[in-house]
Image 1 (cartoon, rainbow, N blue to C red):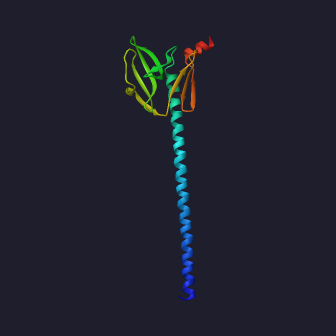
Image 2: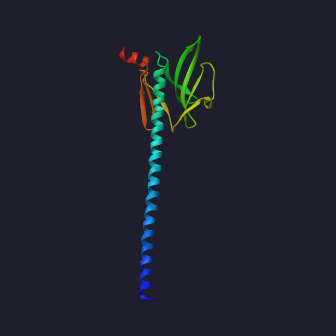
Length: 160
C-alpha cells in the first residue's frame, strides 16, 4: 500500500469517526429532550387536573349557593360535598365525592341510597377531601392545593 492510499484511508476513517461522534451526539440530545418533554408534560397534566377539579368544585358551589343548602357530609365513608334542593316538594341531593381515582357527581332523591360507582366521572385526580368548620366555611383539598368556599349560609354566620 503506498503513502497516498494509506493517507486517504486514514482520512476516510477520521471522517467516519467524526461523523459517528456527531450522529451519536445528536441521538443523545434528542433522547434527552424527549425525556425532559415527557416529564414536563406529566407534571403539567397533574397540576392541570388539580386546578380543573378545584375550578369545578368552586363553580358548582357558586351555581348552587342558596342559604344553608351546602354542607359537608359522609358518602360511602368518605367526606363529600352535598347540595340540597327541594323540587316539587321532594328533597334532592347533588353530591360531589371522590371514588376510584375520580371526582364524581351524583344527583338523587335524599331518601334513596346509591353505590359510589353510580356517580358521573368528572376529573381524574389522586385524592379529594372536604372539611367544614363551625362557621360553615368549607375547605376543599386536592393533593397539595386547597380552596376555601364561603356559602351564603357561612357568610351570614360570619357577618352576623
